[in-house]
Length: 176
Image (cartoon, rainbow, N blue to C red):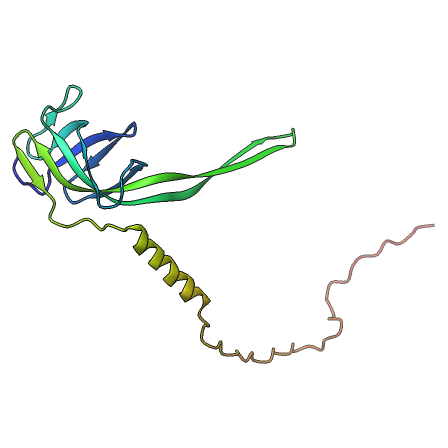
């Protein structure tokens, strides 16, 4: 494989498979490493592009070099269990610990495919600064809200009393 824009690799990490290309960012379950550190994934199941190379189970001589961009927590997942007619309801939730990886290069038996861009690394100091900016923005007084003047409601054409209806309700008459 040469340096191709459509080249990709299928890698296995944390028990899951991911299709990645050079320059991609993707999230996996937490892998140890500080933001900016490099790690190498050697479990490459397949290489694709102009030529497809399948591994048995892994492709020999292939690896994917990644840079840790960020360690973070995913969105909250709610788990709700209910058994009807038993008054049983149970609500649980969790947030997964995730790692964002940037694919810097894909090493293949026939060459190396490097990424065009650079990783967007967020370290703890930058994340703290971003959080402080969000708090300051939320606490800042907002511009005065203009009071809306509502137009007076239109009066009904008829008087506000009981309206006369053409159909009078039927009353029961007692026969003696």
